[in-house]
Length: 355
Image (cartoon, rainbow, N blue to C red; front, side, top):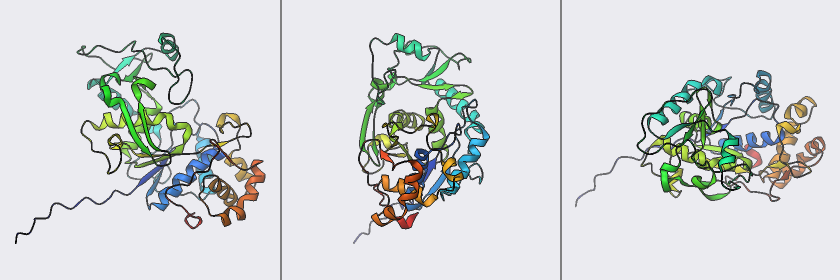
């Protein structure tokens, strides 16, 4: 009887790595707190790492006092992190302002590989060149597919990084059907988008000023992030980020078992419901929404805030909802409402004992 030679052992599963990446341009509001709580809760339920990253590339708007307030607000909620700007870690630096050289190198590499090209078009130029109004995935009326004004022809000569008057665009059109992106959202299920139709060749920024899309993808890759938890208002960015992950990873990446192949290089995404105001609008830092700092300094009980936010997205059993909802309901002027009007039960099955 012949005994089969065993193959190599499968590598151990990678420890999940979740991240929370606030922008310190104003004080955090309760909607930001929800994103942090859900991400932290999922990370702890999965026995994963929770990474705090400060997205401060907008130097004109970001201020040290807002970053300090962010750390204080998270600690007040009982959220801890395994890596971050204050505690360090193996994947630092954890402020985007200290990672600019990495983004510039990526831009240069993409241009050298003929995967991106310089562009001088402004947003107004793109809208003016569009032949007809177009609504992209996010539903914004000014989101139009790039018409290709500065797109080079195939077989063009060498190009270089633009000066401070121009940007760099990912050459989506040359990807053909590979620009059709599929991924499985942890809360919304299977998603599909043809990036050529929704936005076309999209901006990656310019030297010294990376776009949001480029910076978050670069950082998630370098930090080994496996899961991204955020509000549904950012769903429209996901296809571009998945596509950029794939471009940076190169051809031939295999998908996770049971998931669309386009997920191979990208993190898993989980888009939770939004908290809205009495007019049905999502909370915004610009609209003077209830700030966590205000609640913290007024003596509000963090347990009440956690319970009320958890109730809104189905995190807690009924006993906890009843026990802690009153204080935060009074502070906010009413309970959180969901953007789409329905409760979502998170698939990881978090319970009160995990908080």
